[in-house]
Image (cartoon, rainbow, N blue to C red; front, side):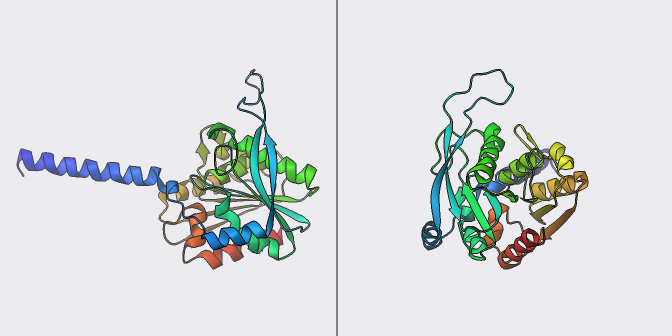
Length: 260
């Protein structure tokens, strides 16, 4: 092979590698949105509420807290057990609406969806280092305002990372992580997971390479009751609800919530 041919081959290989890395990095940026009809149905089946979350000052950083950020949220159903659904990016809480509607329809659960700050109808700017604070505020709202003591945290992608981090700090009935990075920004789910005493369920797609790698790490780190489910394909986070495995996934989640 000539020097020119080798150079061209190397360039093509480099471009292919860069494209693959870019695809992995952006895997969670291709989220599907539920249909307008599904969103409208969920809107009519829920009530909108607003949750105050601490401003941009991180706990313990010595700063002065400002005006709380208002998070837009929806409450579905009125069952005795609480389930908080945390969305991935760039999606918002509507990505959970179809499942929230079905779950609340059983009569067994009160379901809370919400938009992280800067997403959907919530106030503030996107702040990935405050996602765990937003989820903790949603948990406090369900416990103190809705008066529900038994609460599950279920999150997709970075919403799942936040769920694991918060699940290690508060009392939960269980945590479900779907396609979640083991670490993201200041959120260290890998370090938090061993401190979760409640049952955990880890879910990912076989060809969602980075998510599957994180699942393996998180399952190995978990010390409490744990289970895992790997589906064929590369669907990421709540995109799994639009995949051929949608029905199976929904039933898997319902079984986990009911059993625990």
